[in-house]
Image (tube, rainbow, N blue to C red; front, side):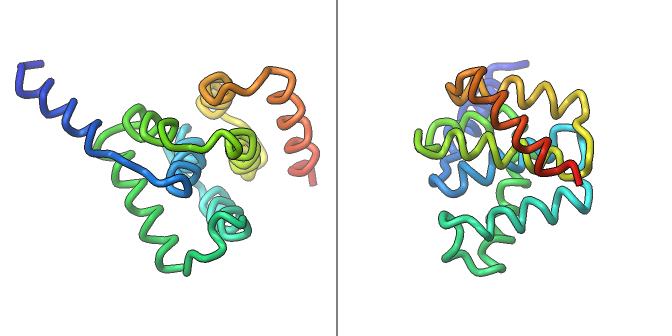
Length: 148
């Protein structure tokens, strides 16, 4: 990697700024894409889940779609780490457990958790500062919810 590549990479990371709602959606999107693809059930789950939340109630469908497209574009062009770091920088503390719960729920939407999704959830609870006890409670509830 040359000097200009390093400068360009630093500039890319600095250019990504997200609002609280975008940060929340970014974490959910990262979880959905953790196994390298997004299934129809995962795509539907993320849209439905976010649209039911108070945080996104004022977002019309086209605004929600554009936001998710923007986040997916960042994910594809700049990578998971850039999007994840930008999301962590702006996600409010009071939404961290909620983000983990929603992410877990979405990851379980297709009925199974891939190794990549499991690794992401393991990394995510630590990065969000959630205790292992709380993370296990959330996972247990989401497993029960997605059983049927």
